[in-house]
Image (cartoon, rainbow, N blue to C red; front, side):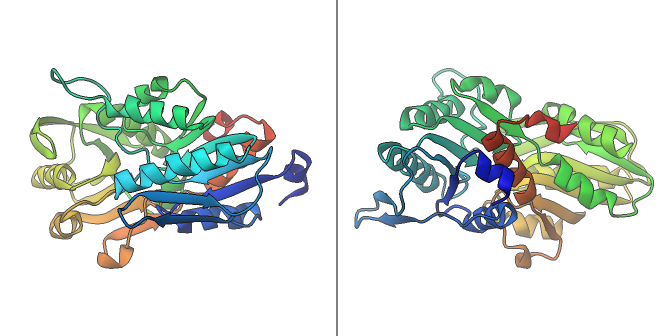
Length: 317
């Protein structure tokens, strides 16, 4: 731990079972050990959490994305938070690199749940004092919380990876209208043009491309999105722009959920490279197309600034 961090008092970083490797990377960068906790299951599948060291009066950070198995990892986070609260932790921050249940952020039809708000309520009731997360599926989810939330972006890590490559005649592709703001941000920082896909979704995990707004012919196209789930939409967009004359298709996303046969789809698609961050554990050995960039330095800096009472927004200027 650096002297400046030590002056502000000690803090502890814990991890559930969702992504312990990312938690260890964060601890290595910050020069602190990963604090001890035991997460186990009862015979009937219930989760049990035991904090194995004193946390009285201390800042505690729990690194736990709610990735698959989503329900198990969410319950681990809630139960660990409850254990820390009952152990008199001074402040509890949930570091959720991936915020699950975020896609249900409104009522598109009668009698459906808004799970993004429900999870926010559960975290607050469990005793979380602050949330640090990356690339929410929809920015308005920040307003669902009655506690402070730091919304980070994986953009710096992905941009650094791309800028170290010598691509020419490039354009950024937004896979749908909802991703335009994110794609425009990348296009601005990479000094590239912007193409927008007019996509409709007749049912969950299924999409139809109606129009391509912009020119992709002969260009290297970067498709940016917040997450890749089944990869059906991503591969459809890649196929559509390839048919319109794109020279090369490269995709990038923060969260590699990669459900069902997503990796097989990506391998069979025109996508030449799939850039993902490590918010969710991804076995890159399953596909030669998958490249992983780490958000551990970004999260470590956010934790440090939070502990020091410094601005986190300065990270993105």
